[in-house]
Each structure stands twice: as structure tokens, then as C-alpha cells.
Length: 342
Image 1 (spheres, helix red, strand yellow):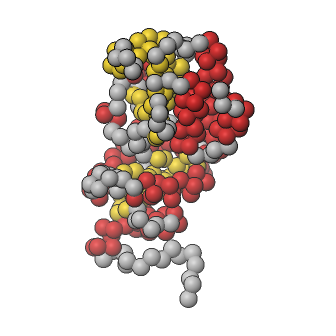
Image 2 (tube, helix red, strand yellow):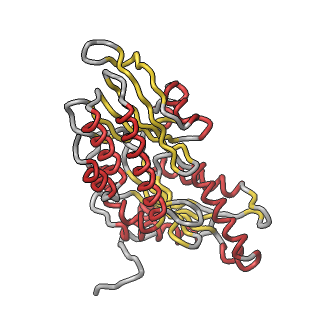
Image 3 (spheres, helix red, strand yellow):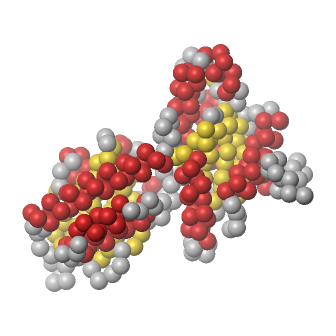
């Protein structure tokens, strides 16, 4: 068996979640020599959990990342359609069985072991192990212990990456993930719907909310806006709170009109929502298409110019930077308003 302590140290040294997931899978493959091992994460509504494959490895192959995060929710398998996986998630206990869909080298149905991953109160996902022989008690203890380390490490990553009030991703995480997201787009197959769009969302007249109702009510408004963001956007869209009343969304859409529709859906839901004690609250949105050589500050500046235009022309609107430039409402010059070099 490979060096246990060295492997665990290596696992906890990563800050990139994709690397943590592939390292976890490769460690289990080295220790167990199974037919295959996979890590699935739960996504979607708790009443209709779907399983997104994060990483997997088959015998004799290297560990690979699984499904891309922007796969449509309806295309993912429902946890309820996989009885052993569903039972493990519901009970929080390891579940064993036979997988008639997949066979071992002798053509017999593979043995299946499913280990749930629960982080805090959240059903995070499962580890799936396919093998020719039942896992020994020693192997099961090793997997259970490693998953405890994995859970603790993911807890720490969550703490450092998320905004304390709303639970959305924070600004520091946005800056760290920006280049990685552009790289994934550049490597995507030709013709795939993976154009990325960045939207800045600003709550209209939020200072009045704090002045008229107090900061506790203002915080409640921010929490409810975060909830509306989660309900309006898809599981693969990245949602950030930048501070104060400003939020950022990074999403994928194959056309500008589809991106506009996603942001308009959120704007309309917020306009229709009645905030306790405060009443109606609206938001203005500016968005832009991400470019292959973009830097985070440049993309944000374009979206910020679009949101400034939305604020100046009535608020409670969605404006696209590229559309404004094409119509002549904005110049094409990239001015951030922060620094003049010459």
C-alpha cells in the first residue's frame, strides 16, 4: 500500500477543488486496485438531487476530471434512479450491492460499494467503488478515514472561499478562479456552448434601506437577494458577493440573447419579490462577454460601465456592454475611470 501519511499530506496541500477531487480518486485507486472508482457531487434541488461526476479512474488509467460543471441539470442522472447511491445519501451509511450495468474482467456483474460524503448538514456526494471482490474491513476503514480528512479539508476551503453573510463565493475566490475559467473555455471542443458572460448586479437605492430600516434589515435583504440568485441561475453558474450590495455572476450561454434572458429572469424575480418590512426592492444589471485574453479587472470594468448606464437611464434594467457599444450609447474605449496611464 502506498505511503498513507504522504498521500494525505499531498491531498490537503491542494487549494484547487478539481485537483483535490482527482487526487482523492487516484489515492483510492492506488490503495484498492478496484475496477473503477468515482466521486459524484450532489447538485440541484434537495427534493430532486442529481449526481455530477467530479472525477473518476478506471484500472490501468490515470484519474480524470468528470462532467464539466455546466452540464444541464436535466442531463445528469437523478440520485433516486440509482438505488444504492440514493440509499447511502439518505442513511449516511455505506451501501453494498451489485451493479448489473457494469461487469468485471470475467464478465460478471461488478460489486458496488457506495460511501456517502456529508459536509456539515449537507449531502455533498458519494464515492463509488466497483470491484471484483468485496472490500475488506481494513479497506472500508481506510476509505472512511480518508473521507473524514476530505470533508475537513473541503470545510476549510468553503470557509475561505465564501462570503460569511450570504454564503456566496467571495471576491478573492472570483479573482483566483477567473483565469482558470477562461482556460477551460479555450480548451472546450469547437462548437460547444461555452461562451462565458460576466454580470454585475447592484441593488438599487440600498443605502436608503440601511438608513430607513437599519443594518440588520439591510443584511436580511442581502440574504434574500442571495437566495433569489441561487433560484434564478443554474447549478454551474458561479455566484459571488463582492461586498456591500454588489454581486457578480459568471455564466455560460451560446448567444448574447440567452445570457440577457438569464439576467433578465433574475431581475424580474427580484422586482416581483416583496421583502419583509421593506417591500419592493429592485436591482440593476450590467453584463459583458468574456474574451480569451481578458483579465478580471478589464472584464469587470466593462460590466461596470454597462451597469452605470443602467443606473443613469432609470435603474431596474439589464444592459449589455457590447450592445451599448454597438448602438453608440457607450464608446468602445476601455476606460475604467481608475487610472490614466498617459
